Image 1 (cartoon, rainbow, N blue to C red):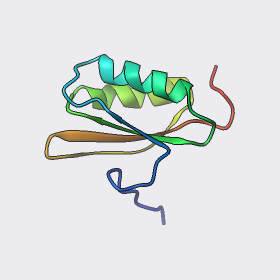
Image 2 (tube, rainbow, N blue to C red):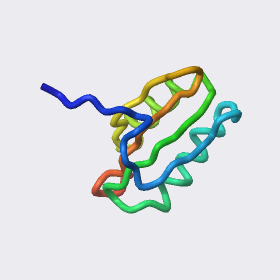
Image 3 (cartoon, helix red, strand yellow):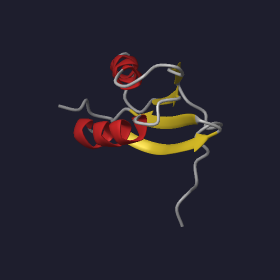
Image 4 (cartoon, helix red, strand yellow):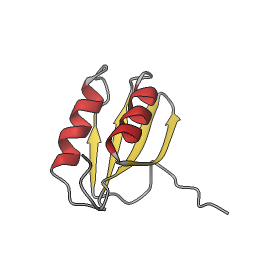
Length: 89
C-alpha cells in the first residue's frame, strides 16, 4: 500500500510561493530554487496557475526530479519536488 502525502503539510526543505504568477514563471522559479538545493531535499511550490499541472508533470519526467505529490485546494496548486541524489543531466 502506498503512502498518501499531504502536499500542504508535508515537511519540506524549502517553500516557494508563486501564487499570482502565470506560466512559465512558477516553473522557472522552481527550477532556480532546486538548483540551489541539496540532493534529497524537497521543495514545495504553491501557485494559482491552472496550467502548472501539465508543466510540473512534464518537467519532472524530463529533468529527473521526483514529483512526490501534487494537489489543488481552493484554487491553490501545491507541488512537492524532490531533488534526485544525482544531479539530472
